[in-house]
Image (cartoon, rainbow, N blue to C red):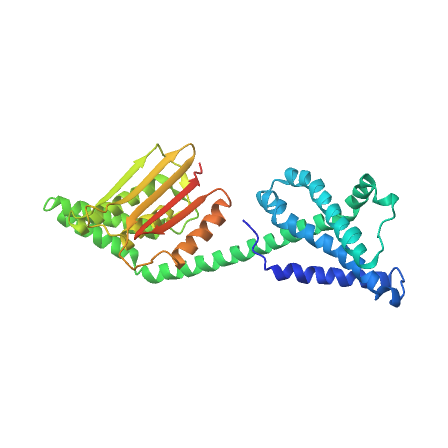
Length: 346
């Protein structure tokens, strides 16, 4: 999960750091006010904090994102010397080139500007930029995680409330459907079978989709039942290719993910044109599940540009799989494609 931090947070942080240097020199180092507020002090202080700021930003948006975001602590530690070298280069340019051109004064003496000494000395002075960027990144990442967790809890509560509203005596509904099934059995076996499929669909939605994990075999059976009933609805005018490849048994996935993909095809796709078939493909291999869908949409419609359903799916996937999933969607020329790859849990 990448940290989504407004850039002005970094600005405020370093404005505070800049004024802290002034307060430190005045209150701790007992430097005189006329020196602290001189142009020379201002330029050297600004160039030093500016060097820290540049490397702080570089480290925050590169190495922290590449390594800390993926919990690769060892690789992050190995990247620190490179960040410190950049700090030494930036500081040298700002103080020994830019400030020197303005004031005619070097911050380092001639002997101190020797390359090996200068780099070695600035490895110490550059550590705050690396340390501060790592602490800031981890802090804001923690805040973002907490925010997402709270949002998910709120959405789950809303979903539970909506489900309670919709579950008007589900046992009564199931018992009624079973009664219909019993009455139809032997008289119209085809309709009786469809009633049983409908009962299984409703039972799965009511009892399984609110859990943290779903058994893959049950989720796939739901998809098969759902497509079966849709075929009845379209009266043999449903043009959809559904394929399932790979072995599966008791693997577990996030509930209702496959259902989301399948429902979107039926909700928004043109499915009654034999020249424009929709596709739902599921592949299971090497501990991963891949589902891809393709369908034509009505001209002028833009169902997938935004939507609470898709945003909610992304948040659920991020929460459950972190950086281990791949989700893509493409809308062009009145067609829509979706693709998802997720790891399977035993």
